[in-house]
Image (cartoon, rainbow, N blue to C red; front, side, top):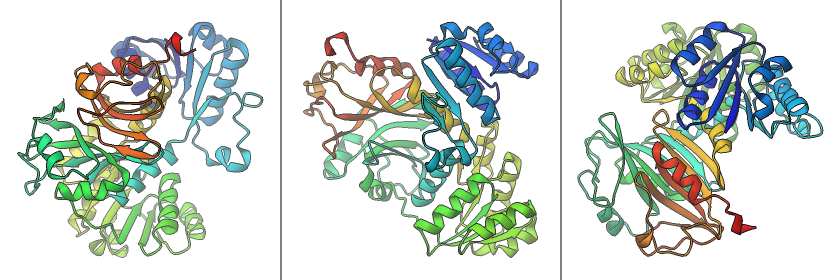
Length: 458
């Protein structure tokens, strides 16, 4: 597939990396010659220095042959214009734009991004996507990652196996026998820097990060099975009152009104603005790296510190300071992948990677077949995929024990008529089932083929 990416920053680079690894013909446009040089030297992509919305630059990048344009520059207006030009002059079939300003996304302007107005097929709001991820992490303490699928009926949990984890050294098939009514399947583990898609006879070890696909309503019970029974935070301090911080704070006020909330914001005008818009949250003006400000926020009594500024170093250091001053848990927003291991090594309990969230949303629309949702894990080493089974799929109608599934693929759950099914050897997939599975990177293409519309379907 021919894809043009406007923007060679962290998100654009991450998307180009994934798509080029899968053999797509990728062209990247950016006004920065150094960014274009870097991306062409390290990835198998073509680079063009220029303005992503200019027709001549798009023409040089091969827009007349492109099947998709992904606009992820730092500027909403450039992203929108690039999609309009790609549509009007080059008839590019699919246009995806990153839109950061919430003014464009307000419900009363829902017709803005339509074929008759601004022809953008998919809009991605990183702030909202990241904000939702933060809220899910807050709601399920004990999970290092949680993503919802199948209209919120199914969830994927990443759970660390600690020293006191009661299911360590137990074969996975025995877990199903011990807890027959628990709709949860361990699909993969991250162990010693390597990802393993598990089989039923495998077992967990201390230090493993287990990826579990379960019924959404069984998520807390699943965490408890792994020894994680942490309580939801009652006192939360948020560093950063920008779009993400404000979204999280406002949502907490609406969904968890009993939570005591304090926000630290370095910009005085923004602090005043956020204070006016929150009902009960207390906003402090100052730096999250100032120990006096942290003490004014009663950090020593806080259950959770969430650092959501636009600076990775500030987020990491302020979360670490908060824990040293007595805060029970720390969560940091970290853009640069090079900081992820550092954050873990200094005791930060969880981190959010906004680049991974955005890339996952893009991949959902790149994947062929009836793919409804995609979430990339471990820097793209695997994906959790939700797909709809069609009558022509080779998976339909056969019991699982007779299916020749490719290595690196494990089905975690099936949604049928709003009922979640945990698959076993006798389970048969039916047409229109929503199948949620864990696929290693080299198995993703097989998943596309298994859920692709064949000509017989028509």
